[in-house]
Length: 73
Image (cartoon, rainbow, N blue to C red; front, side, top):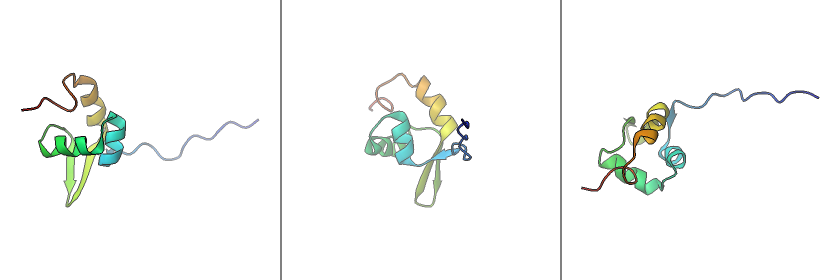
């Protein structure tokens, strides 16, 4: 029997909003609103495109103990 081949593509360093929302297990619109309010770290804007740092998302998610994506003001 042959061993399965590992995936050749590593996980991307930056995520789309849809991918980050899935990773954080929140609604896409909720994440867009939190980005708009400046509550999400690791956001990179490229023109109209928004990308989020995977490493920042993973470290931020574990330390964010408040309500979903930050407290309401």
